Image 1 (cartoon, rainbow, N blue to C red):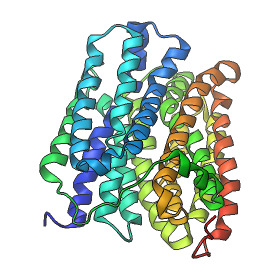
Image 2: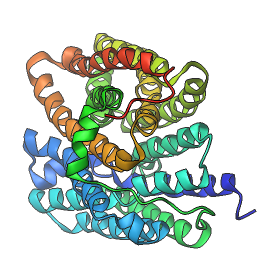
Image 3: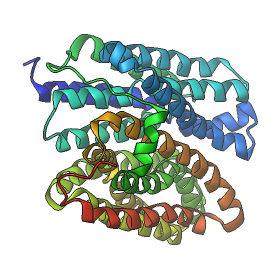
Length: 401
């Protein structure tokens, strides 16, 4: 049983779900941190943006020095999750915004030893027909990212420190699962080379870059929505009822980001295998861009109307996520596939830093009714790229440049 790939998938996904609770653990307590750390608008946004910034640094460092090729992948995951839990937990001992942001940056660095490593392990357990498996893993990432909202529901009457401590404890459980329960895959990984010299091959490969442009449009929207939707809920619900129900806000956030996103990942992966990756991404980005505009019209309206639109948005905004990296692996030569994937991930997460900062500024000038509409730019541009990529889906071999 322990050598069964579905057994491995289950526990890898659980470990990732628990570890990814670190990502937004501080975002959900920003109202408390604003009082403790006297945050400005910029520093408030940077509490969330510092995590992807750290993730970019960690992912590039790990890929460039080939850490996953030199050391056991499970060991890297275990150490990263444990150190991430410790760094995250240290937040409860500081009253400095600068130190707190540095802790968030380091948490992002360490999460680069979690998510990409989980994907690598999964690829080894599922050398073929991994579409559903990847969908489940991305679903675990989505649920894990939304898990702090669920923790808020459980610890409604507790102080903000409970959220930080609980997410750190979950990350420790992730490390335990990966070390003691998950086994090494039966097949060994080929070395993935990351090189600036090979980057020119990535840029010259048109279908790879089209997939990248689609991913960049996807990331323009995704993390900004995940970061600011709970704040949008808070303002909208208060505008409608004159009250701030933290439990309802946390529940709505968990449903529209976590549960809806997990459904979107699994169903999206299944549909992509039937209709093609590019077509699935076009549909998903089309609906999500429409929702990014529509959600503003629900501001201050009936609460359940806002939640329904957000749930639909949550399903489609992540349904295509796994397909962009899968497309890169299909169109890039083995020589530079590692460079191509690292390039895609680093640029994509760099874009999230920009949009996470833009939304609160947009809200000041145009209000919540129009702030999220800026996010529709990303998926609309992504649709254009993926429509161009469709013509390559029927070509079995791409001429090497």
